[in-house]
Amino acid sequence: MKIAIVVGTRPEIIKMSPIIKACRERRIDHFILHTGQHYSYNLDSVFFSDLGLPQPKYNLEVGSGTHAEITGRAMTGIERVLAKEKPTCLLVEGDTDSVLAGALAAAKTGIRVGHVEAGLRSYDRRMPEEINRRLADHISDYLFAPTIKSRKILEEENVPGKIFVTGNTIVDAVNQSLEAATKKSAIVDSLGLEKSGYFLATVHRQENVDDRKNIARILESLEAVAGMDIPIVYPMHPRTGKMLEKFNLKSRADGIRNLKIVEPLSYLDFLSLEANARLILTDSGGIQEEACILKIPCVTLRSSTERPETVEVGGNAIAGLEAAAVVNCVHAMLRKKRTWKNPFGDGTAGRKIVRILRGSEMGLAS
Ligand code: UD1
Ligand code: UDP
Image (tube, protein in one colour):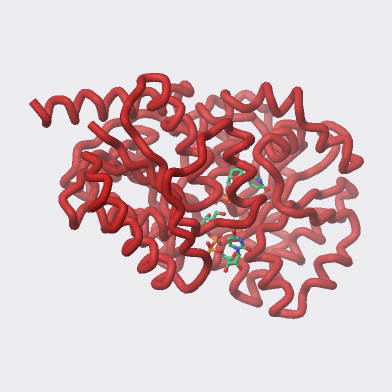
């Protein structure tokens, strides 16, 4: 058995890290194939050092572009590596363009595909991620569903691959890094914040920030929340920074009192900021999960979520983008008791996935 582990963006590096570590522990032949969709130091290399990961064997350096450009360049490069390395299976994680490229390239060259975090659905077709995750699920041989709900979705769609409920590797990643974050990160102090005395915000979804009306609505919402006189710290994704410039909204964002915009942060710093926040406002998938795991109330700046488990356990409210609704959700979530249960598993998803793969691949080989 030989596993190709594909990563392309910040969340894939974080969520694949427990699988890479499990492969190393069990001495399973594997290699990391980075598409290079994310390449800036603070969206890429910093995570390899924070998470103690080896450097990728291949980096395709596909860079930025349209969806077709990223997917096409990544597919071509992945196909070339697969022809040379001849792995028995390839793992992709999540819903990015790199995931679609990896799954397509492998499936068409007869290499078995494992989709980590399978069966998530927002039912919002405006999201490129919804297209990517649906397609990846339907061409994968192994579907690693984080929850029973995601397994049910896959069963209802009659996906041809084999489904396993494993939990989400984000729980493993949080567990593996939280102590180091607590010990090593001084970010709360260095930003002049007090524990539980600030809100943390992130916004980067294409349907939110590439649309002038929506990004303006988000600024209005952040301004309204900042009016509660609690500082908001906002590590800004480069896509959002680029769009604020394009729509001439940068100075508007910079002028919001109590809103502190900073560069994207390392995992240890970001985890520390999450764990000590009073509340998190986000449109990120992974951050909705981490907030839920860390028992920090979350308000999601979207009209849907592919992580409904976070809402069902009481850790997340789906606010949409309008300021009044966002402020109402913030108040409601601040009143919540933080007693909900983490719905994403016990932090052993990485090991389970590797164990399942080993069992299945050995069975197929014999
Ligand atoms: C991608 C994923 C998204 C994921 C996010 C994680 C897709 C369709 N989208 O979105 O699902 O939530 O990654 O953060 O795959 N840029 C840089 N440096 C980089 C990478 C990008 O400055 O290292 C800038 C470029 O201006 C680029 C823009 O960010 O055009 C968007 O990058 P892209 O990779 O296309 O999408 P993300 O918004 O990062
Ligand atoms: N993250 C980080 N630094 C930041 C912002 C996010 O380390 O400045 C981490 C965060 O802890 C989570 C992941 O990046 O694990 C989420 O990535 P993102 O929001 O970019 O993508 P999504 O999860 O929405 O696909």
